[in-house]
Image (cartoon, rainbow, N blue to C red; front, top):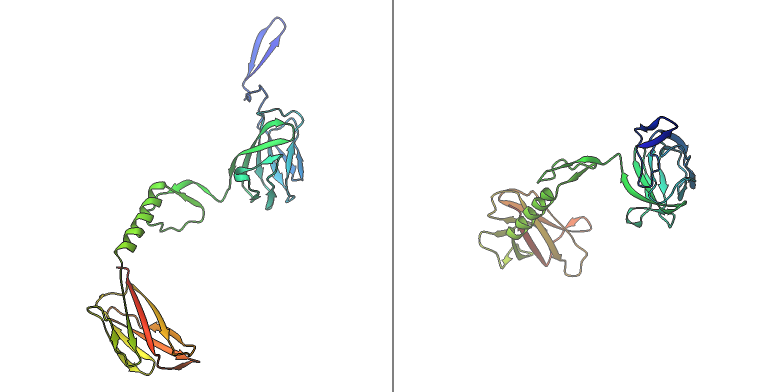
Amino acid sequence: MTITTRAGKGLSLTNTEMDSNLNSLDWRTAVIASSSVMSLTDEYNSFSVTGTTTITGLTKASAVSGHVVRFYFAGSSGTLTHGASLLLPGNESITWQVGDYAEFINVGAVGSWRCTNYTPKAISPHPKDEDDMISNSPTHLVTQQSVKTYVDERIVSLTNNNIVSFSINSLGSATGNPAGYSSAKIATGHFRITHPLGDTSYDVGVTVDGDGAEMTVNYLSKTSTTFDIYTWVNGVLTKPRTVDIYIRDRG
């Protein structure tokens, strides 16, 4: 609020916002092109910034400690460079995008400013509370509760996984077969594993001993009761020495 004295008339009051140093905060917006050191017009405190030139500092003749200015980035992408005269959050430079908003406060010298608020247009101010993170949004923040639930559920899931392992030889005979699992040779380099899981929510890991040969291994035809393992050398199904199998039930 500005207080004006008039001879013989007492005081008149004008509804104008002021900062802590009684500087008028006139939020009319001036259009200004980006430059290395932005020379800000004294009559304005809000600026629509155009252009793409990297900004390394600000200057405003009337600015004293505590003076605030606001930027709206209206031009194409550019860079705010962190430094002694332009102090940015996290001491990191910022690449602005069209629609981003920033607020700076003078910190004791004409050319020394700190960014106290930076709001990207692409980030929604409304957080999502999704325990399963199902929307996979690139623009929304999340609540602490949803992050905790998401992590806790996956820790429990991992803890409850049943991991079994066993080996089969080139004849399909198993060593250390867990209860409910069996193996059989279908053809050279082709084996079928029968399991008791009852669905397809399991992962298979396979390592192979090719007895010196560079062997490729994969598994296919995953069903609720079986899956097949194939071992290859140069694209030809080839019998291995042994195949080690690791099964993790995610159910």
